[in-house]
Image (cartoon, rainbow, N blue to C red; front, top):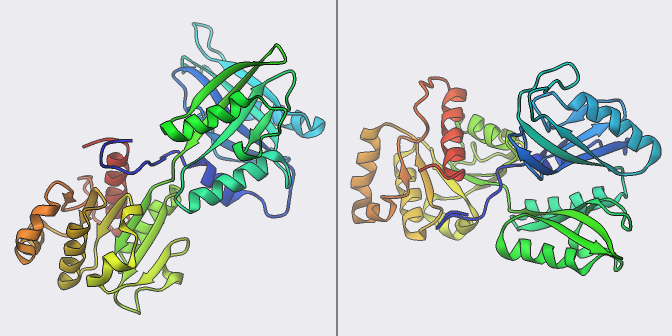
Length: 352
């Protein structure tokens, strides 16, 4: 986590899986990257869901491994037994299933049944609840053990037979805010696990619910982010216009008392109503959070708003980006939304 920024997780494969998981209870297999070496497409903690018909949600590679993973997943479904598989794409003879991937990396993947009532489904549901609430949590993925049942577990529900080292590692992961690998002995035999720290996904606040705010919200939601949209106009502040987002009618001068700004990672002010934008920015200046504040509109409009704010604008100086968005030559609402969300994403990833 960067100084002055909330903990955040940009890998939202957990949210993608939960959003796409079949509601019919169809058999499925959860695939989780638990260890990597060298250059790999995804890193430990990345997940995908493989269905019994071979279809899947998510990716663990650029398409190189998924066909083979589906074969292993079929075996896991048929046997009901979790297993780990390894892929090594390093060296001069990198020919993987007829494809020279050239990734120069190795990956270990845990495969386990993920149907209703399974430890994996239960653990992911609990983690998803924490994610939606903006609370950090952790998961334990046991991928090698002669004594324990392999798979994904909620740390609070680890059976008593499991090593205290796993519970302790989960506690440390939460305390330190970072994932870790665990290599320990249980009954004198080796057990390996990946303990994943899960910070909340980004929470984007959009001040202004005009038509051009819709593609911004849609782009953020497609990434698995949480989105809150506020506007003082009843005709705009409608939930059906922003499916998946939290939509609230809020008068700009009451933003601080209406929204938990300290729980937002970034905000974009784009009401197209000058007095409201001034009021939103005044509230954000006084609140001191979030660290990223984007303002839609040309530089001349930003200067005029700064004049309206007076000395208060100094409290926004290092936080304000305006005109908001990367310079990508965007001209359509969708292109502008891409530029905005890309800039927020880059900032969350640690770019200036």
